[in-house]
Length: 143
Length: 143
DNA sequence: TGCGATTTAATCGTATGCGACTTAATTAGA
DNA sequence: TCTAATTAAGTCGCATACGATTAAATCGCA
Image (cartoon, rainbow over all chains, first blue to last red; front, side, top):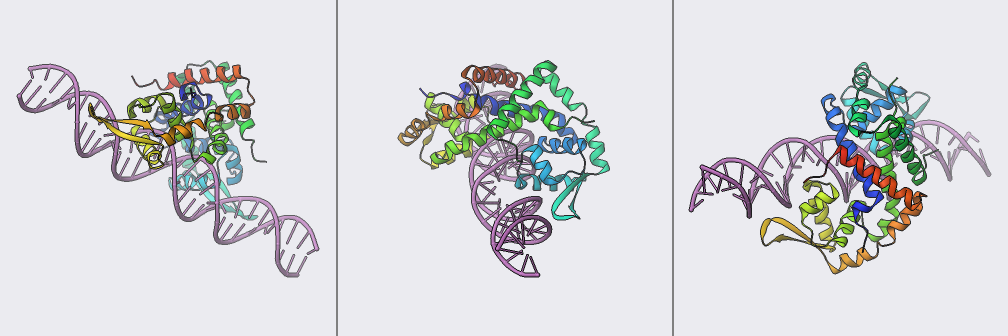
């Protein structure tokens, strides 16, 4: 008998990720943010002025995913995309005032999510680290 | 300072799920299957003749996701979609001979994936169960 | 019995996400 | 120096995934 999805690790991961996405949506939708956009905003809030390649490595996304996503965020007025004067191939990303203000409005989001999980801070850190190890083993980060 | 994605549980889950997807792709692509299609096939191989609603509940997907996915699988000749004679609203899904043959060709996939994770069988079961609890807490299954 | 409420799929629009490929700029090496 | 290789983004096509809505069938209850 074939293994059914409810018994598979891959499905548990797949469906848990979707559930996390669903749990974030009501927290982010009032701010006009999607979940991947929130990750971009958080990454730039932690380190502004990142290049697209750097952001792509950090979020483990390809340029063909990030380019339209960033264009939408630029269209919303949250960041600017400028070519690096020193290397015209690179695009540098900088939050606008509106982007920084929006980032400040997201400070409570991680806490609200943590409460929804019902996990203790220790459990959250442990699970996060186990998943990071698994991810890095399955798909090492780009150099 | 805002929490950056690498420190977030949500990102660990999100990126681990994508890494799992990426790890399955080379196992499934030679069979002509995508990852969600593989889940459908596995679910029907375990219990053939499921209704769309039943499958949607099992895989935690909506009809607007499942309908086009199943139409593609029907187009590939792996299953049939027939209205239930007793209730014309329901669509019943049945594997074809080709679908069952394809399912048999996937029997090694879970083992190959398990090896890629580098986790022991016990660790896999533990992680799976932790994730299932988290998922069910964030997004309870439909009744 | 008959009609409003419910259930079930399907349709439409939008947003990821990636493989394959293209284009432009920079780098490296003969 | 001058071109081939490399790098960085972007374009295109396809496959999920979901919210909102619709259409059809069935159910429930007066």
